[in-house]
Length: 108
Image 1 (cartoon, helix red, strand yellow):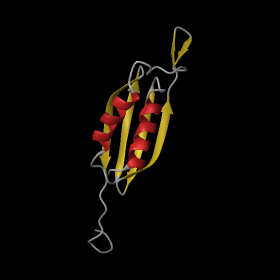
Image 2: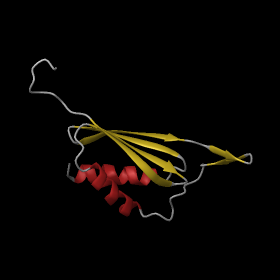
Image 3: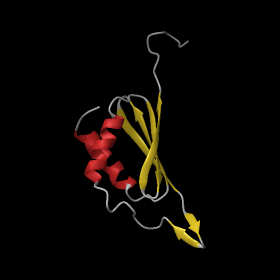
């Protein structure tokens, strides 16, 4: 998983993540390439005031975040990674790997 296109995609994911106050970003991989990104944003209400309408990641460097994401994405060929965001920060991730069974004929 290397190359200019991948670096551009990871940079776009990092920049988008900085705009989410609460929610998640799901990144899907196929053949070691990013094929899609799904963004789920949540609006939280606190004392009748909606939170989450403005960018919150202003103090985070998108290049630094992109480097961390590149390490996280490095070895995934098939599957997805979900980044969970709370208060404008990625607080955890979930990684689901899938494997293609190409050498067993019609499958299991």
